[in-house]
Length: 436
Image 1 (tube, rainbow, N blue to C red):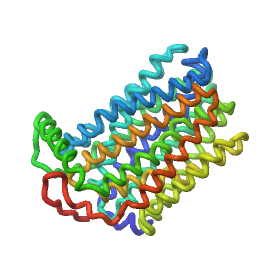
Image 2: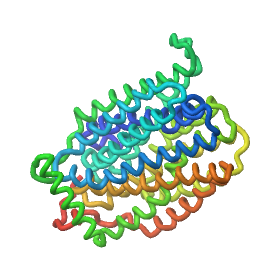
Image 3: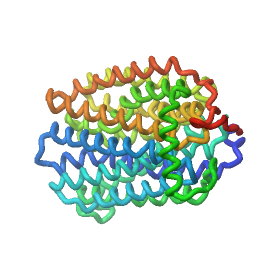
Image 4: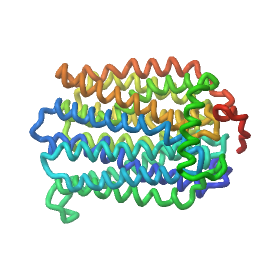
């Protein structure tokens, strides 16, 4: 891994690109997976039954995902027509940062405001990630896609984990920081998350170069050309059979992965575990995920990205069965550590495998499809878990719905050809040259 890293010439760009993951992962750990689900139950909606708050959380995640579904392909196609990937990324990141910081000002019992800002922050976070993913082909030589993608996720796990650890200490020892209590500490954590995200977005904005694949155009012209290109791509999708097959597999298994990320803390809270146990388990996942993501980058380069993903999905299948029978706190920690071993690997290798299958000159558009399916899956997963918990009054039964997603995704992935030539260019265009 070390020799591979030092072979890459544009290390400053790669570090700047990866630092964005270091920064925005604080939103994923502190807000999505950590404090928001617990704080929604205990502060903003303290008078509601746990199944009702679970339903609200699942619905909020689904609404945010639906908005991203509507935006992703169109904005991706527009970004490919000009050098707009960085500008779109920073714009949506700003939306997420502002919404996250605003959670600090939401008072007890005001769950509609909290949920609304959570949805807005989620839209900013997910939409910015479309263009962050698309920039992978700008910063990484083709032969090093697996390694660079893995480093992005690894730094994300480390940065998100360290910041979550700080926020957890802040809430456990609020007096050390001159705070009145844990409630004030949690609220301050949302504001600090916004600052962390904003600060570590700066290196990407300054140092990452976006490669121009089309003549310079205005945003208005890019919008018209992008929509036309999107229409042509839809008409010519049969040319991208390997892409379609991969996306079908990805749509299934990433549903299970994202649902676990978004609903794990809520699931543990519904089973009666304390907030301290839940946050510590999440911290374990993040810290284990750092070296594990790097290791999966090595697996992807040595064995193949497809093999690495299949290994991860097999582990997820077993973890889901274990979670259904979960009773003890130590089991929750063990599950968290096991998920940390494979979560970053599945995510990073999915991104790098997809980058190999798509035409390089339409990366933002195709990553728009990629994120669209990921978010469409996230509409179903959290809503399914939340809905089943509400109607059956059993949180345990809802977790078993994830089994079919992991199994179905793995079966489809077996038929994906990782050696497929992605240099066919975008729809209606001649093949584009690919160089390292």
